[in-house]
Amino acid sequence: MARKNTSQGTPATAALAAAGVSYTLHPYSHDPAAASYGLEAAEVLGVDPARVFKTLMVEVDGRLAVGVVPVSGNLDLKAIAAALGSKKAAMADPAAAERRTGYVLGGISPLGQRQPSPTVIDDSALALATILVSGGRRGLDIELGPTDLIRLTKAITAPISTVAASAKTITGGR
Image (cartoon, rainbow, N blue to C red; front, side, top):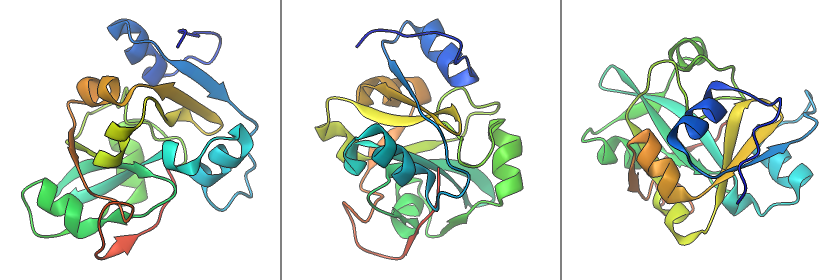
């Protein structure tokens, strides 16, 4: 993968460049009427939805955390809570997620967040050579190796998606 650092600069791309990680930018024309940011990206970019991951903010024991799951599935709240050593998780308040990350909903990237949070990436990412995550704004995805994403976000991996687990689920955009 070639590093493509054009005029698409975001805190996410800056973090990748600073770390010397190879990545590919995938800009696309975002439709504000799209029901799901992640599924829109997969369709417009012609990528299998199992390779496009959404970034969801959750609250666990009064603190914010990040769940990164394929857009083809849903976040399993009990599974992410368990992965973080708790019994219960809930979706974070959207305004709190935006303040914490510095990104707007639909453009929240797991990379380059204003205040990093504990991160859990669905373990299905490990079976893929590359995955796509939000690049820090609507209409921009970043393709990179899952091990690079894990290293840069200091994430743990666990089966936190309905793709890998079956429990209480919730859908959401990235």
